[in-house]
Every structure is written in structure tokens, then in C-alpha cells.
Image (cartoon, rainbow, N blue to C red; front, side):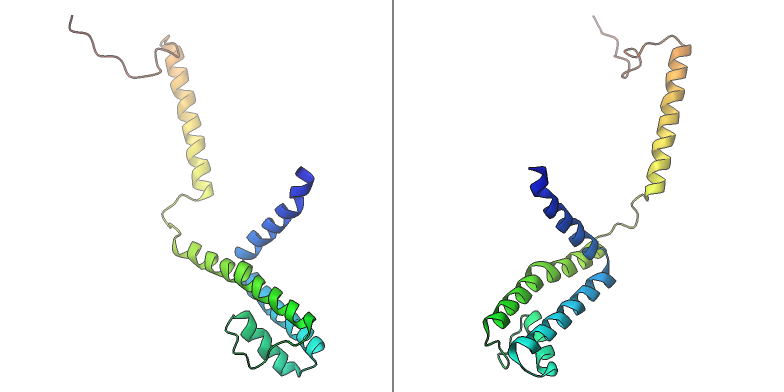
Length: 151
């Protein structure tokens, strides 16, 4: 079962890597447009300018209809381009910008969290030493003292 999940984990890590790097995301979008333009130019035998226009219009899902694929290869590529844009690229761009909008700038940084944990460990050690000196057991120091009863 683990072997079956490896490709999906690799794809997931790749998507996370893309989503966390705007430059890489834009570069991958441009490479997708360029690759589809070249393939469309080859499959449909149209000018490169028309192929580039088709790729941009198709990727944006506007689809003016002025240029459309006639061959099965062109249609398959159009379906893949639209699917990749709608299911991968646009959600990654949206997720990236959404994560930037909801960032809490007051949140502790990693170094601050580590310092707090270290300080808490030190305080705990000091409390344990103090309890040991006063002869308290762990059970005695576990909670607040109980109130005296009024019997």
C-alpha cells in the first residue's frame, strides 16, 4: 500500500512547492502556455501567433471560439490544458494569495517558539528541584491545595 502512495506523495510535495513559490508558479504557467502553443502549432498547422493566442485564451477558460482544435491531438491537449488550469494552477494561485491575506504577523516565529519551550523546560526543572528540596512528592505538587472543609 505504501508503494502505491509514493507517486501521490511526490505529486503533493510538488504542488506544495509550486504553491509556496510565486515565481515558480508563474514560470510553470508560462512554460505550460509555451508548450501548448508549440504543440498546437504542430498539431493544427496554424501560425505560432495563432497557437499562442489559442493557448492563452484556452488556459484562461475564456474560449472565444475564434480558433479551436480540429484534430484529436489538439482536442486532447485543449482538454488537458483546461483541466490543468482549472484544477491545479488557478487553485494554487488562489491559495497562495489567500494564505498571504490571512497571515497573522503577531504569531510567534519558530525561533521564538523554541526559546519559549526552552524557558519552560528550565522553569520546570527549577520547580522540580524546589519541590525535591522541600520534600514534596509529585502528587503533592500536582495541583492547587484543596480548601479546608467546614465540618
